[in-house]
Image (cartoon, rainbow, N blue to C red):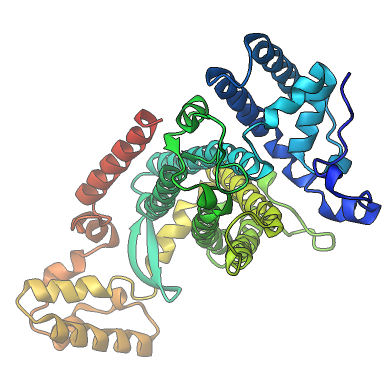
Length: 466
């Protein structure tokens, strides 16, 4: 007959934990999302125990069957974790004991909750971060596809939030595809470094029992075991790295959101968001608020804070496991969830938004946006750029004085500024100039075709790498 599990250290203490300590000490319900990963880690540990002779055939079969039943029950929503048992590990062991008796306690042979927790976290990290990588890829594809659906649409480009030059709508959206690729690659790199299994490190210095850590790592799909037992239970570097990469990702999503907020405003009017992704006002009937990008912009602040929390958590910890590490999941899960939800809703938003071509085109006709091309015209005629810049700057000043755009000045104003201006200067148009900007990576027709081809090839490589 099995004896009930209190807490695993009950033999050392003369008093039970107080109710207040139980409530303060428990890691539930926060870490409940790691429960299935803990089942997987325990199943691999049981298989390894059997392989090295620590479990007999019938014991292995009974434990494997019980773990399968617990997994099925968890997936069906039939299991409720008990906070009084402190964590997912003691809940799992208790469930095993209820199914197979004292045999369930053998799952803790050659294992500590320190490496058990580290293993469950690594398993979940690898799975969830791969899902995040895929979510980034999905937004990248949506941005690219949406841009290509609106090829040839010209819009202003900005510096200092002032009209500067001009580009294609497709080229503007591709900016974020490229930025997100750096984010994606950072997470992929982080996965490579985290692809090590801590199972078997035990409390901190390993075990004298004849375990096979390489087998455990292989059974769980890891590339290899972790190198050092103390580091195995102390390390949360991969979470700090995740936090930093998540903050960077959310900064990029926040920048996209900021531009969507601006470009959908009445002051710009370049993009219309679908009604299903906007809210209204409780007092102003005319309002259509861009809550999605505003919330993403706000959530970026939370994720930046999560990254700082993870670094602060680790900064003064001595080696080995410390209870402080229970708090790593608060920041990690919050950052992960905010990244995933932001990527998902922005993907939907981009897929359903619509550009407003006439607004974009009208914006390219003001703000002296073609001035740089007038300077380039003079450069082609042999004038040094600095001198060309001065000449066109004076034309802009004249246009400002007259209250017109520089493109609206009469031809004699141009010839007065420089004899190099010919009749053909009047044929310089935004559409012509944007098509001719064909330096590598720029918005010209040829350069943009090459860029889009490279981006499509890049995204195809994502698929083949899965």
